[in-house]
Image 1: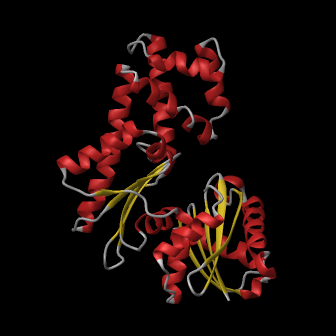
Image 2: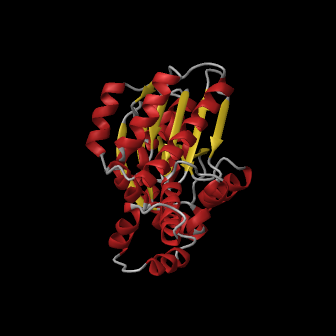
Image 3: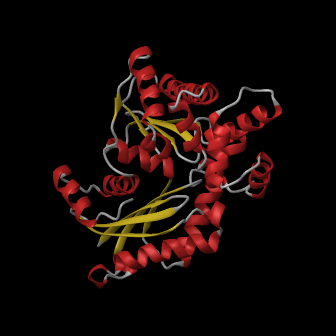
Length: 320
């Protein structure tokens, strides 16, 4: 029998196959399986592609799968879990299933266990905490309209707002304006407005502009630095709120595209957490898909060797 761990993100779906001795045997990747943004049929197709690819290892069948552990966006809600269970049933998956949201498996992967705090800042943002009693605490993760402070979308949107205020004369001139114009190959601010409202539902495109705001801040642009500092304050607030709710200090991991690609933001958050609040920030131990596997292993009482695990990850690496 085998165990499958799956990380179903907004842009890609990654799966790992393991046996009941804690050995990773194969990996597979497909497109997004976030049915909320891509639709049920697309999610079903992506999950099917990953599962079939993993089953091609040694010609195993779906009946050979003893458990599948998934982390998918939005899966923390009952209605969404029901949709995902229906998708898996339609795909012929009749084994035991563990369905969590993507932040949960990221936390377990980052710490190598179901305990600790994680803040994810990618297109969106969320902070999640698990204490020794497995009690869960969260802040954020409410989407780009109600939240996502300190995320890629947040920095991209705030940068665009600053461009428009500068254009109006309500705000100082900012390097962000020319950076956005050059990046989009535009010549006028009016074109930016058209671009934004033509992509009003495309969070990824707005989020992609965040790096221009970060670049401007690194070049000491005052407007950009204010945006970055405000976003950092929001991220720290999310973390401190979760830590306070937990009632005890836990190691904190920072992950997601904003932290992974910007030392400026990561360093600012680190310094505040460590110097002002005396909290311990740690590097991510494993990826989210490994977190999904660990959850499955824990459920089945599977023991694994950490050194062997790291070597096996390298062997099947698909650059997740």
